[in-house]
Length: 326
Image (tube, rainbow, N blue to C red; front, side, top):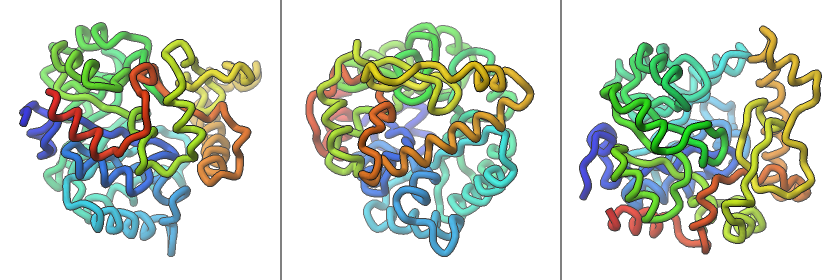
């Protein structure tokens, strides 16, 4: 076993997080990651909107989803809270979801795209910990002021929303903050995992590697695209959420939004505009994940770790192999 501040905070065997992914975080994948010795993160929008746990409503649907995952593993689970301003209805829904997660015994929360002070207050009152996604010193300092317990350091090789700094650059910026630092981006094999720990990180967060697994319920052509892709095949687009997100290049989609959308994203309405853009993308990805929108290959989000992802395997076995290699 390897002991880091991450493993001590959340009580897991290996300092490896299977990051939350929409729409890829199905219950079986989350459970397999935790059962393998790391920790799987529940993505509540994915669990309720995509994977069927929305009855009798999304609050109780989430509870049912968590309880189903508990039938697959008794290991620690995490919860992802996207807390960006924009929709009062969504903000209320996320607050209720966090309450449900706490009631169901989850004590590790990963926040992103917002000010996490209110999440920290809720979670700390129940003895839990909050780690916050950051891309640079500015957002890390704001997160620390809000009381977060650790930082997910999103670098320029990440899948999903990506940063601008390298693994080493963001570590150097944040090393003096006296918080656990988690490397997010570019981790696809034992080689990158060991490198991140040698740099000084307390653990890693991985996403792309866990899409290409048997337990992930995303369509097979998405998994095959990850296996076939190389680092140079990864590009980015702002059309999915309003900010850069890594995708597999298909030479057909546009990287930038229209002039009007770009202008609105710079205005005081930017949060609302991003909610609309993201909402439309969520519905497209939901249809894609159910096999109803197979032409939307611009939805194939992946990071540069595709370079070392060469096969589809069991998520549990991947987690065990990575952990045992440290």
